[in-house]
Image (cartoon, rainbow, N blue to C red; front, side):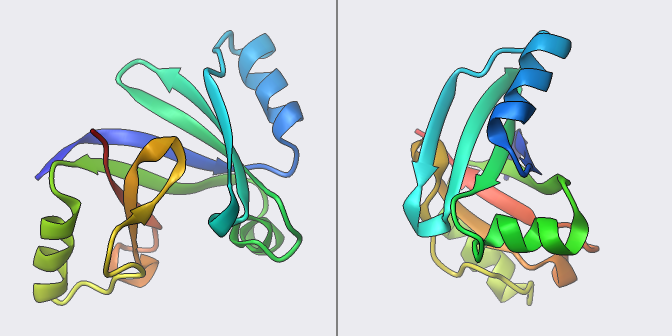
Length: 133
């Protein structure tokens, strides 16, 4: 079962400039930053009520976020939904014929277990499912 929108991922070219906008202009506060080496991304989390904004900057020119920005420009890259049991949800989706990018959970930013659904199966939107303790 989907519990809530966990976060919205926004691809940015310059994390520092994006943080400045969200903090100084919108009055929000970055609470955590980390680098996820295997995803070639540096992230900053900004709580917004019951969900978060996740700013994503590529750490390499060939990373997924860099490729996304090259193709689409900066902006919303994905929406993440929180689930209780990610492995079970992935099995249900696979059995229903949903195209998955990740068939098994992997570690994401903030210690979450994550998996992505293919945009061709989700009306053109990259969907992330995440499970947090």
